Length: 450
Image (cartoon, rainbow, N blue to C red; front, top):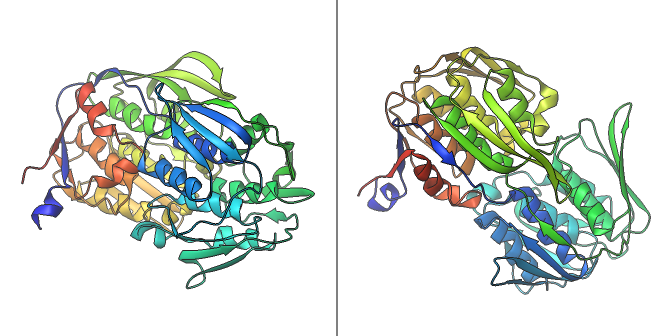
């Protein structure tokens, strides 16, 4: 291993309790959308609480290359001077979205009904991720797409000159696909209809309505149908972004498995399409309380207190819960390793096409730490042996996946031996203050010395 490679390694050790208040950064999903919808409104949208991470910066840089002015003021707020629906201009260069699947997929949708051509690329992880699930519905609007092997980045979207509204039933439970279709529908006459079998994250629908779009969602016999009226006159807004439940999950779950821990995590978004992780933890016997329930920016919010829970039990996590906690399965699998009995995740094949194959990544790492795990294409089963049972003592690969890296660092805080992550750099894509915040709470996390 070279000195440069070792410089990116980071280890976590068991130690004292986690205590204090953890102020989590803004929600990543909402941050992306606030920037994009602010760009599609005429006038100045002000955004407070925006997540300052590599992924969100990728969206910001892409929008600037499409002709949008975005600035940062002395109050730590962001101002977006929107160009209106259909107002993007062709960029001079290829747009590099780094590691951010949300950036590329949502922007593909927004561009697909504009009369411009844009080429996207990304890092090695993003270039390996499937884009056909977005390309297919966008072609129904009249857009064309030309990518590596027809399906991967680098990929060029040629927007439809005369877009036609699409009626699309998605075979995937994917909020990114839904958002891409709705963004395409903004610059299309008539009604765009999107149907999904289970409801995925609805941040796009909530925020479009806040900006003034005419949009509705109803339950049908076969799922959920969302209808959007094209050519809305989106109005600029003042957006306050609540804290990210996916980031909060790492803090909350760590407190559950580290002895004598007691952590308060304020201002967490409890959108019902995002709170599956909390429902599952409560079923497992987690000591969680939800305080100061309220609404901010159209989203339900609460302060969450998490305490050490030594008597967790294994549970079955049903398939229909997967869309509401798809990003939290890696950290949940670490909690399950400390539960008593079997925890089984059903309907999680979507994890195989994230930043890494998250099922394979977690199975490999957990086994190296002494945890018994089984997998199928669509399930993952963890055989927990209770508190204090995880051996640790392994070097776990992150596979350029921020959630894999953070999950194993959290696991190491309650394992018998330290756990080392081979590459901590991906953490900055979603939670750049993770290491510092955890250390302030009392976590024993150290960079490897060269």
